[in-house]
Length: 474
Ligand code: FAD
Image (cartoon, rainbow, N blue to C red; front, side, top):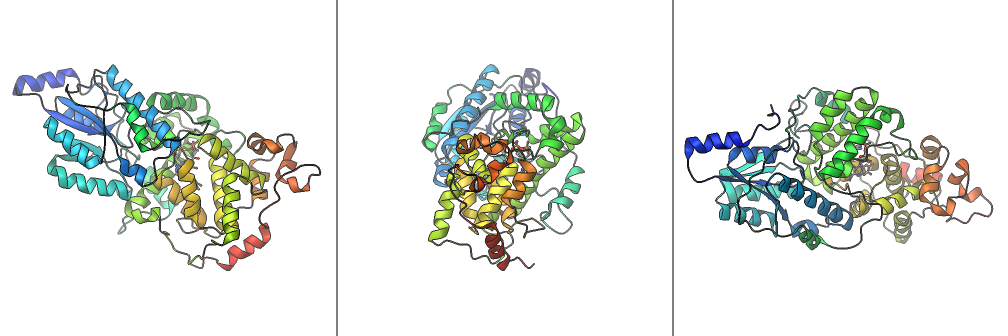
């Protein structure tokens, strides 16, 4: 059970100083995907463990080498680090930034500061797993790994009997709802950081790569995230159940980048939504459970980031036609306006509505019959919330190689348009060539005289037949 506001105050530390009267002790709080001061179990535990703490972030070039440092996320990360540093300074501390190999740097800082303990959040990716194993080797018993920091329920704690993870969402969700979440920790009042610890400026993140972010990228950081959260709880959550699939309504929380970088705590979000109550809150909590679900799959099967979770024996297309189709898909020029609108929103904002993600992913994998990894890579290149667990496993879910219990469903762009963009407003917003076409006719530009728009790159009926040939028969 968590401690309440101000639990680790100056009084605690003074009490300890009085009893021990030794040189002040130091611990390290390593920030990873938990770039926040509120409800941060890592920072909380590090502060409890010693008189002083070094809040450390390592800009690790391996992240760039692995292709994960792309302009949208680097720009957002820079905001996050600047905001974290500002928040720490308000509390008498500061953020210590180092560049290099994370394990080497953490070990070096720990040695230089004679730190007794090093605290870090447990991750679910293969990258995080390797980092943790190496840290354990380097630091031994000084390493403290904390669960339920990046997710609401810790992967591995909600399991079916005899298995290490749930492979189907519905039973997972049932079990997940029974988990008692910890009480969120308040932000610390003071963060005493030892003097003389060398730090690099926030601008060091540019080492990860440069390039222009999408023009409509949101501002990163805990403060920006909390502003959005407050507005969402006040005026979005209530109608979420009815409006979450309304493409033009844009009525989802847009909290995903803040969750990805840990500017907001999933535990806190679940608590606050449940406190609000109602069908909107229930639907929102369910989405947060989807996030946890994918994390527990990846934690158990880290290779699912790049290999089929349930192979269908697909022979994905990679011929010249496929290459041209992939280019048209990426450019938002498939001739199907709803698909194109989604792809253009992605380029413009580094974010795409979930309903559009489902459609464009189904279109690439099932209609064009292109390997899900091609689409997942493109999403990771642009999404500000681009996340190994959520992205790769949602792609697999859509492609039929993942956890969908109906792997053969194919989303038809015209049927999706009728249901989720009936008036065509989403298309008009993102596809300027069609901005003047009124009503739902915007979805079928090939039937409009005088409108110049790329013709459809694929026949939907033929495509569906091709996919059925490779039908999953499990
Ligand atoms: P809301 O509707 O407000 O939902 C609240 C939160 O719940 C989200 O912020 C997110 O953290 C979580 N959530 C919602 N839907 C899902 C879901 N299907 N799976 C997992 N978590 C979910 N989400 C990412 O965070 N990163 C990704 O890289 C990512 N890639 C995706 C790729 C594909 C092909 C698809 C179909 C979905 C992907 N999603 C991804 C899930 C989902 O589309 C986004 O989380 C959502 O659109 C973010 O918008 P929001 O914050 O307004 O969501």
